[in-house]
Length: 181
Image (cartoon, rainbow, N blue to C red):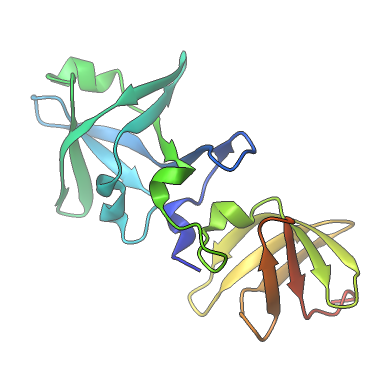
C-alpha cells in the first residue's frame, strides 16, 4: 500500500475517478499572493507535485493551477496562478485542496491509497461480514483499519498476516480476524 495519507480525508463521489482531499489552504505568506498549505500527504511536500488543484470554498469547487511551491521552515507555501496579492490569497483561506483520484497514479491490483479502501466491505476468511472501512489511522507501528458494522473494530493493516486480500473491483477486503474480537 502506498503511503495513502496522500489521500486520507474526504472524497467526493463514489466513482473510480473522484476528487480526493489532500490538504487545505491554512494561511497567508507575504504580500504577493502566496498561501500556506497544510498537507495530508506523506511526505508533506508531495501535495506540490499535483496540478491542477481543485479548491472547495463556500460556493463550490474551483480549479487552480499551482505555479510554484516549496518547503518554508515547518510549513509549505505555494503560489497559485491568478492569485497575485494578499487580498486574493485571503479569499482562499480555509479552502480544501483536492485532486482527481486518477492524478495520484496507481491502478495495479497491489497499488492503492487509503481513500481506495474507505467504504470497502471487510469479511473474514470464513465469510463473516465485519462491516465497512470507515477510515484508517496511522499508529507508528502499523496502520489500522477502522471498521464499522454492528460495532466498531480496529483491525491492524498487516498484509499476509491479517489482511489476506484486497479486491477493489469487488469492493472487499478479506481478513484473518476473529469476529468476536
